[in-house]
Length: 65
Length: 475
Figure 1 (cartoon, chains in turn green, red):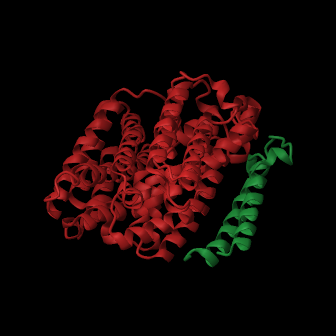
Figure 2: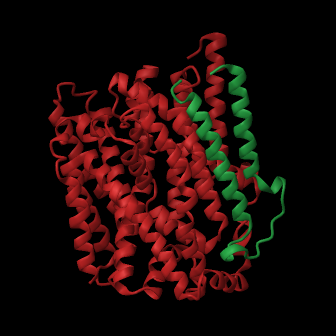
Figure 3: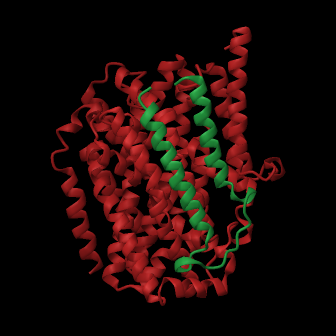
C-alpha cells in the first residue's frame, strides 16, 4: 500500500469511527420509535453498515498485500 | 420432554460431528488445526460460535436487563470494528503460520523475536486470563440446566455434566470436530434466539406494546447512555475501540487465523464477522429489556438468569428446553475451543521445548490430557463464581488485550525488543488487576474504561522500546 493511499484509508476509517461517537453530533431522545426500539439504534445500524462497506472496499484492494 | 430434547440434540450435533474426524486427529496439525483446511463458512461459524458464548446468551441478556439497549450497540458495533484486526494481524498470522508451521500464538512470537522468556510469558498470560472466560461457559451451563429442569439437575451437577461431555468429544475429534460442531451450533443458535424473541414478545403483548410498557416503567433502558449513565462519552469511546485489540488475542481466535484454507477465506470470514453482530447481538438484549415486565426486581448475579427465566415464564416447556439446549451448545462450542487452544499451548510451548524427542502422536496425547486438567480447573472456578458473567468476562478480555501491543509491534511495527515486550505485558497486567481489585484509585482512569488506559500504557512501553532500539540499539 502506498503511504498516500494508506493515509486516506486511515482517515476514512477514523471518520467512520467518529460517526460512532454520536454525542459529538446529536443529543438523542430515548422514546420508543419503530417497533418500540429507540430511534438512535437506527443511527448505529447505519454506521455499522457504512463501516462494513468501507472495510469491504479496503479489503478488496489491499487484503493480499 | 426436556431430557429427550437434550439427548436428541447431543446425538444429532455432536456425534454427527465426530464422524470421520478421528483420521484427522493423529497429527498435531490435524488435531489442533484441522490441517489448515477450513473454508469460509466453516471458518466464520467456528469463529462466531467460539465468540458468542455464555457471555452472549446470558451476559448480553443480563446486561440488557441492567443497562438497556445501549449495551447492544456497544457490543454489536464494537465487535464489528474488530474485523479490522483480522486484516492488521490475522492475514499476517495466516501467512507466517503457513510458511513456518506454527500451531500456537507464542510459537510465532518466539520465531519473530527469538526470546524464550517473551514466549513463555505470552503463553502464560494466554493461559491465565482465558480461565475466567472458560469458567463462564461452565457457570452458564449450570444456570441453564438448573432452570430448565426446575432444579432437578442442581447447578453443580449441570456444570459437571457439561464439562464431562465437552471433554469427551474434544478428546476424540480435536479441532475438526470442534469446527464441524460450531457450524451446526452457530446456525441453530441464531435461529433459536430469533424464534425466542418472537415467542416472548408475543406473549407480553407484541414487541411495540411491550416496549412501551417497559419504557413507562424504566425509560433509562432506552437512553443512549444506558441505565445510570452506564456509557458516558469516554467510556463509550473506550468500549467501542477495545474489541479491536481484544478479540484477536483470545487464543482460540488467534489460532483460528492459522486454520483458514487460504487468505481469501480469511477475508470473507472477516467481512461476515464484522456484519453479523449487527443482527444477532440484539436478540438476547431484547429479552433482557422485556424481562422487566415479568421480573422487575432482579439485581446483581441474578440478572444473568433473566433469559432462562423469561423462557420458562413465556414459552411452552419443550420450546424453552430447545432454546436452552441451543444456549448450552453455544457454551460448549466456546469451551471446547478454549480447552483445545489451552492444551495446545501447554503441549507446544511448555512441554515440547524441554522434551524434543516427543513424537507427533505423543503431542496429541499430551494435548488430550491437558484438556481434562483445564476442564477440571474451569469446573473448580465455576463452583464458586467470583463475579457476574459480564464482569468475569471483562477481566478475562482485558488481560488478553494486554498482549496486543507486543503482537502488533512484532507483526506490523517492525519488531519489538523482547525486554520491552515483556515489560509492557507485566506492567499491563499489574495495572489491570490493580484497577479490577480497586488497589489503584479509579481517578487514574480519567473517566475511560480501565482496559483502554492499560492498553495506552502498554503501547507507550513498546513504542518507547522501539525508540530506544533505533536510537541506541538497546534491546
